[in-house]
Image (cartoon, rainbow, N blue to C red; front, side, top):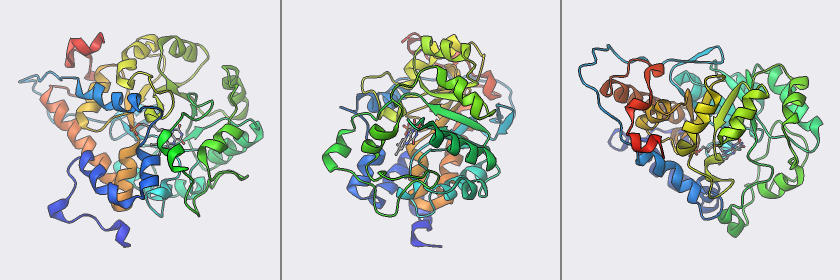
Length: 364
Ligand code: FNR
């Protein structure tokens, strides 16, 4: 066991995701920390994501008579241990030398899926060998469609089960911390499933290579490449959600990229109810951004999500204790969710509805 993997001592064992964030801090250089934790512009959207959850109150319900609440969730034909997965993030090796392989092992131990970034630093084959939980591929669409096609075909061969097309990044947001730091990836960190170069500066690479003119026809093109279900990540409005389902998307991820793209975009929790209403159960609705506690998960379920994805907290777990840290982060949220379900009289995840939360937020 390398020092990076040594679990914290019992006295300092992290009990919450906030504890993990604190424990992870000293493990990053200041520039890497800024890259991981930062957002675009003035970071208003980044702050709004967590503030929206903080503003909600859940209604306790008494004498509901349930046995232990059941957190299991069925999404796209697969059972998850909890309505919880890991959001796609580039370069997990920034947090731990084993990178996405350790994250996959942690997700597998927790029985929840991992969405692997286009910019994963470990090969799809190595990641797939590390977990029996579902793996999804996050897709950035490049100007050179051949690059995107090769990426998808490789992931499909490795057993990935869905494509998550990120649609909120025709170019990268203005991440001022990274611009001020002149951020470049540390040596040795590079995408393992892409060929080419120019990856050192994520923002310059995105500007040069991402297709900025992507439109709805990309869905039809993706269907010529793969028969995997396609989820759209980065939908925040009812109009786009309606169009997405009309165009045959098999899932929506309500996301503002963790506040890293359009600063001033609403908190994902604020955007969720209108999106869920527009989708009207035509496909699963997931949410990411600012989920830090089991009560946040229950709140998102109450307001129309079928499941949530965790971003930065998974990297905090990874940085603190490798695969075990990732599994622990997921386990903490699942345990907190179980507690919150018991205290609100919620027997199963599909029982959660708007009556669980303060009406003020539902109409916000
Ligand atoms: C991301 N995110 C992201 N999204 C995506 O579609 N492809 C990617 O490669 C990345 N890379 C990435 C790197 C880092 C360091 C972060 C923090 C985020 C966005 C991610 O999928 C997700 O939307 C947010 O991170 C969710 O918010 P929280 O949980 O981090 O608040």
